[in-house]
Image (cartoon, rainbow, N blue to C red):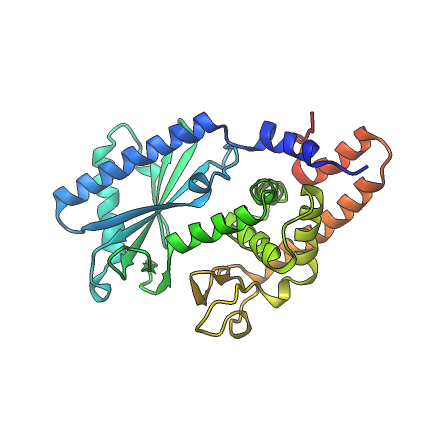
Length: 315
């Protein structure tokens, strides 16, 4: 039997979506962290913050509930007023860690993690992880900037453009947010760790551009899995100006940055991660087809649990 939007919507609301009050609590935690960071860096006098730009699932309102080993993510673009030629990401991240360890004496130093392009702060009690992304502002309003890695390479991007891009597509397809929550849960259950939420969001947005809004949640998921299984090799490109776009980028998966036509946001996905992504999508297509042909509700729910796990229910 097919599942209705009400059926799948019940699962999203009852099992997946982060409740509004928890989202507000997390946003408050983020605000307090940013106030501390700005104050500590101002006192230190080494780096001047031009603007914070909140991004990611928490800002977009598409966060799923925290799970064991997988907290709620809050992504923050930290735009600095700095000289791109004299910006030391390693020094900045080490300095931020030292300042925040001092500012949060109740936390363990292991709660502050330095990554290739981000600096993470984990709040274990609430299940929140804040990823601070250092960016050198390229304009007066901090719309665009250069995002650096610890190795020194950088890429031009825009947190504002990413947020506007999502909001535009969710206005055009009211089911997009729910499909993204479902896709993220599927990715987690299939253990596709190399595929970030942002990749799923961009593929779903691309399908809105290509095919229009989804006719329903089940059909929208089927459309997503079909694209990954059959058409992912051609890349995802939003038709931006300048650069080469998907045709000129060589990688296992190409998903062109809506903010920079020369940047492949999926450049770090490996061949094995791509193959697992495609294989899981093919299996998902079979599962949905089988589930649609089953006559009874219990059998159908059991089939859908192969996609989302034992917490799947529609009541």
